[in-house]
Length: 179
Image (cartoon, rainbow, N blue to C red; front, top):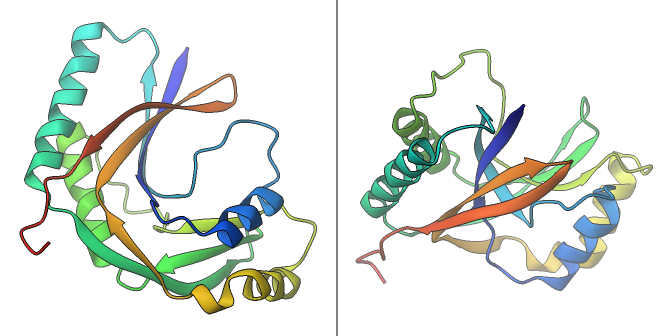
């Protein structure tokens, strides 16, 4: 049996309208990952030895210690017609692509040039409402909050078990000298 490990950048900004909007429009009866930007996922055998899990954790801790916290903002509201998803994209994707490349190197994951995954905060997926109704509803609740100012302070690793996402661990970045 395999398990999915997903590494995310948690969004640590409390905006009640945003979280309420996501809860209403992300249609899932299962435990979801809280607001986040997904960086990468990897399939692993759930029978991986404890030693291999510790090595994975050690590689991620070493990587996170080499990274400083950084600020970013989310203001680019976009629609994915294929997935019927409304999402916010960071104003600059480069720090996230750089972080993903570092994660792939640390974990020994070969980048797939066909991969079209974009770093984004999904707001709605699978909703019965269409693009324009969702955008209107989002702006009514959150429009004056944009851009959302966020700070990247850690990575979180989630495991998917029986359809639910469970937090496995959180690994902090080192504090930025700019703070």
